[in-house]
Image (spheres, protein in one colour):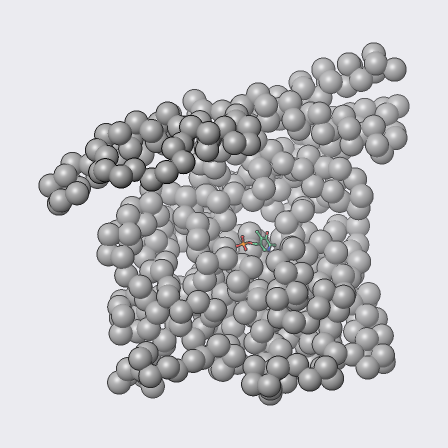
Amino acid sequence: MNSKTFRRDAHEVVDWLADYLDKVEDYPVMARVSPGDISAKLPGEAPGQAEPFKRLMEDLEQIIMPGITHWQHPSFFAYFPANSSPPSVLAEMITAGLAVQGMVWQTSPSATELEEVVIKWLVQMLGLPGEFTGVLQDTASTATLCSLLSARERASAYAVNDAGFTGQERYTCYCSEEAHSSVEKAVKIAGIGRRNLRRIPTDKAMAMDADALEAAIHRDRSQGFHPLWITATLGTTGSTAVDPLARIAEITRREGLWLHVDAALAGTALILPEMRWMADGVTGADSFVFNPHKWMFTNFDCSVYLVQDPAALVQTFEISPEYLKTAVDDRVHNYRDWGIQLGRRFRALKLWFVIRSYGIGGLQQAIRAHITMAARLARLIEAETDFGLLAPVPLNTVCFRYQPQGLGDENRLEALNRRILEAVNRSGQIFITHTKLKGCYALRLVVGQTRVEWRHVEAAWELIRKTATELGKESDGSD
Ligand SMILES: *Cc1c(COP(=O)(O)O)cnc(C)c1O
């Protein structure tokens, strides 16, 4: 492909993408294929000869598109969003074209320095203490692992990195029952051992019980353990519950634990002054992660990892092989030492494009609209006698279920709600997912898509209500 054909084909791709976004509502939100359907249509061997671009685009339409679940569909209410926006897509194109690998400052000074600047902007935008500084990583899972490794190294005076575990460390870690699975994964990978992760019970609002945390730390200490690290979650994945950070910070400061704050989704909401109550106590946190790739209109992947003490991070990860040394090493950030991977994508560019295209005001308006729509839906659900909310709705996520009178049995309620979920998703009109809260099966609807409007949420609710009533009647008749 020479530059003339690249130019022509690239224009075609941009037109294709713009058309796609214009007509994205015409697709079924969730892909309607079975396992193996897509691979069965693809040749088992790579082509020997060059194929024309036209053929690639035809196969994209005919083979690949039917197996796409449309995350950018405004009625995508599943999981947490991975929303995107035109400025982010354009920046991703430029990033791909420049194809920079930003492992050290010298490999592209702009990649490093723009990253420093957008991180500083974000710290201000979220109202976080100015001491926080950080790095862009791929995902919150990576950030949380980096946090635990840094905590382990700081506590052991960097001895585990040097000589490995002696067996005398006996570290314990803490999180709530509702914490994300990436916390357990980090505990496994960091050599702490899953058995040494204490899952602290939650209150009625699914937030960590701080008294139970304090008791668990004391119990562990009295049994010869070394309480090391805790993750507090702002916006749990199940129901966006908010752990009591101020209380937790007070305990961890007294007890000398590393406090990590996982705000993967909810961090974005801190751009709203009225949501800053969630971060009360964050000055006591050692590290903080949030994902612009979830709710801040920035293409996956883009996770912001912030720390108060970058020296602990860098001392945990730094390496200095001869072939990577440069003359300016003592004057610049070499981000290769701020995380696990050596090679790094130029992720700052898309954040810069998004923040400048929306402005802080535009981002606030969009996020506030999502939170308002979720609250409005919650009120509609509460007003129905046959439906009930299963958790408070502090952010953009609504957990609820159909619970008609006389169907009190937990197993039957779960079976009925499972059938509702399957039916509404099969319709192709919306995509929602489920969770379990205190043992109860919950339908879970998240308002966070870039193009979502109230009419989409309202239509989703109508569909769920209608489907529930129909299936409820059938299940009545069946026994
Ligand atoms: C989504 C989520 C994560 C994991 O995010 P990745 O960036 O995909 O690793 C971690 N914690 C919480 C609370 C989440 O909601």
